[in-house]
Image 1: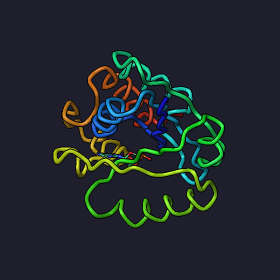
Image 2 (image 1 turned 135 degrees about the vertical axis):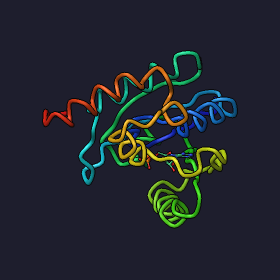
Image 3 (image 1 turned 45 degrees about the vertical axis):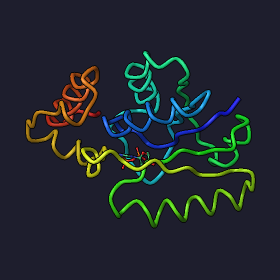
Amino acid sequence: MKIAIYPGSFDPVTSGHLNIIRRAASIFDKLIICVMVNAGKSPMFTLDERVELIRRVTEDIPNVEVDSSNELLADYARRKGSCVIVKGLRAGSDFENEFQMALINRKINPELDTMFLTSEHQYMYLSSSAVKELGRYNVDLSDFLPEQIIPDFQKRINTIRQGGNP
Ligand code: ADP
């Protein structure tokens, strides 16, 4: 069984992520989406909330599993019996970082390969941080976020706007 892992912060999951998820799920027998703890970022949604939002938007894809981890990705992949990491590649900016990460992961776990799926053109410039920025200005988010999570996102933006904790 070919198992791939799609790691990221998914804060929150965007339509660009979902496009990569659908395409990767059609290539592999099983796709594990893993929300990774990133000590450098202070997230808008907790780890558990991000997992729940992804589960909600992927419930129609039977071979997708959603998980979270604070492990090293190469160790996590080994533990899950996976030798492929899936990454989405957007315009320009992703390349240097992703190339470096792929080489490092392979150095730590030589059986691990990274497969890149190029972003669909309409999502090329879409990132979770761009959506968070747009959210502050009452922009229609339906081209950027899966519709099932837009109310959750707007509610969180409003809480933050009113000075509450996310
Ligand atoms: P971001 O916070 O920048 O959206 P994540 O860490 O959540 O990034 O992204 C996880 C993975 O999804 C990365 O491989 C990233 O390149 C990819 N990705 C993010 N947004 C898109 C998009 N719009 N199109 C294709 N891939 C994407």
